[in-house]
Image (cartoon, rainbow, N blue to C red; front, side, top):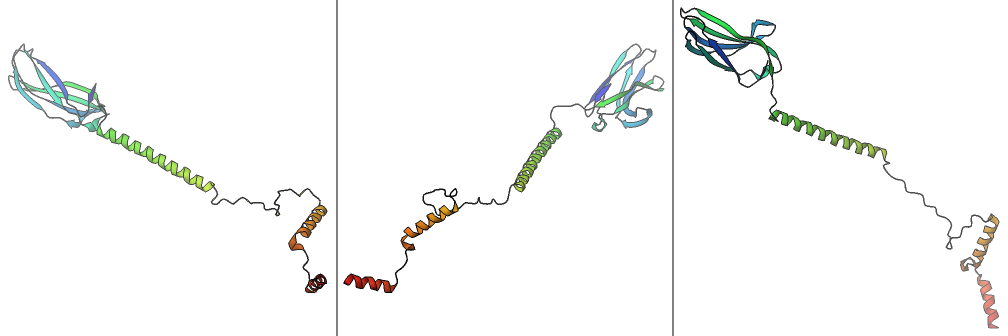
Length: 206
């Protein structure tokens, strides 16, 4: 038998008088017992008094309810419900109308506040892990890339306005070409001495 934790549990107890005299039903009480030893009490519930007389040949129904603690959810307990009554002479009697092991269960009633905050906490943890992973990948990428890129060397050849490749020519040929260029250049011409200029001037005057 399963009963929910934290919610009211209701019992109906029927009493039939098969004797020849009246009986006085006084009260009902319940308790949780250790399932391996019913003499060991776990929790006592309040007794409900009725003080109702049941005449011979008649019967009566008595209502009893209690609320199991939420701390007992998921555990088995021995449930004992006792009925106390007296006969016309005042002699007390006690009858265990229920004496069995029950399982206390926790009912899932939608999304409560505790579950909601648990989901929020898990979502925040996932977002935090994603951010940490992204930062780690970025830092690893920066370490692998060079800090400064070296400029590609630019080849500078000889001053060649015509963009002609002379590398395939022999050295002697290149030397002769360079010699001809130097002779044609006005700057490469030999400067005349003052004596030579004087001789030319005197010749021109004649």
